Image 1 (cartoon, rainbow, N blue to C red):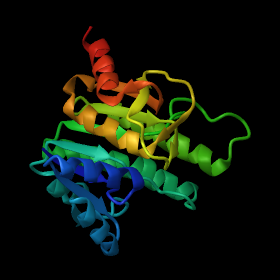
Image 2: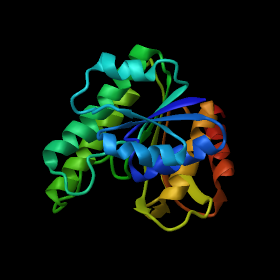
Image 3: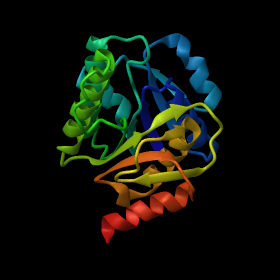
Image 4: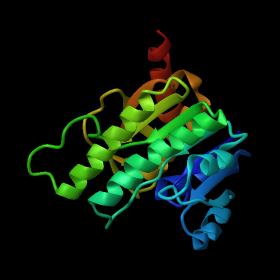
Length: 223
């Protein structure tokens, strides 16, 4: 498959690109800065410089032409303020979805966040609240599109521990942690399983092998 990944230099994206390239897929990562390109090449991915905060839909659509799937894994990242939570975590996601539709790429997977389906509780840090609201708006915008076979993945608290390959993947999991390695492995499995289209899933560490977990949720979608 040819898979285009927005936020190609992110920690989850780099892991995903490595997994895809290792099995012979063509991974293409969109990056903001040219100096990030060598990190993508080291994973086996093709870097493409494209700033989703300033690019037009037709420019992004050109990068998506001929792709089998698109993955939105971009984020404003630590240290960014409320404005960039909106322009990246919401605005770039909407732009990427627009571009996928324009390019005729139906399969569309979003890396979202647990807690993105509810209003942040009183006392939440304002920047984190803006992040959650941006993710909620982005998810809603993607799920409203009939032209995309979307899957929304909402991981728990992200960890850099080595992945175990064992997860809890469900509509509701409860709050917990998950290794970025395991998030990337689940993304690969979701891309391989078209029956997960139309699902919004939470992901934390657990006791079920990744492929079994994805097969289980795919089965519930078609039951």
